[in-house]
Length: 295
View: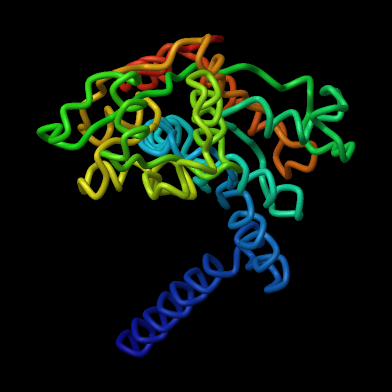
């Protein structure tokens, strides 16, 4: 009898233990959320973590500096991804005009920026284009137009005066930018300063062209020409020798304006990056290759 009673008591204890465990797994405050709620919260979390892409159209002459600055900015702002489009300012201006997505435009000359700025002189913005936010526009940098030569300087060209003499006696080959890009337009002013006729020079076969300053720089680096007219910063980045720089009287100032576009998908973030380009850390990068910071 005692054994039976003990056995029954053990069964009761065992049943209570099982029931207690079942009670723990079914506590009301740990009830599973409906599948739809879980899915919605997961989607919101993923959306919150998606990085913001800032699309920056910048003159080709800024490639190395902007890539370095962009990398530093992304480290400070993990939620931002900088996407660059480097080309001649004329090409970038046309792409913006044709509807390309862009948050910030940095031109190597005021002309291309003015052509997109409704507040600019109507003689420059002849089509009345209204793409940039004039309240964000700044003059960011100044560059210099330079005469660069290949390693060894085989033709012993040491100045713009030497370049002019070589063009006139057809003894040298000069690389320049196309007429629709800023470096080519600055070159045309230098030709005018010296009384040179570009059409005559082309007929004489002493000129080659590049669609942007990087192409001209490459021709000099590869010694396929005797000299080239580029920017001081591009010569520095390519390790080329600069034998002369153009004065303000020869081609005017080389100003790089920057602005946020009116159709920017992220105007606040674009404005913050533009502000960063004016801070000391960015200025140190720009000045290390020969730019002069204006803001």
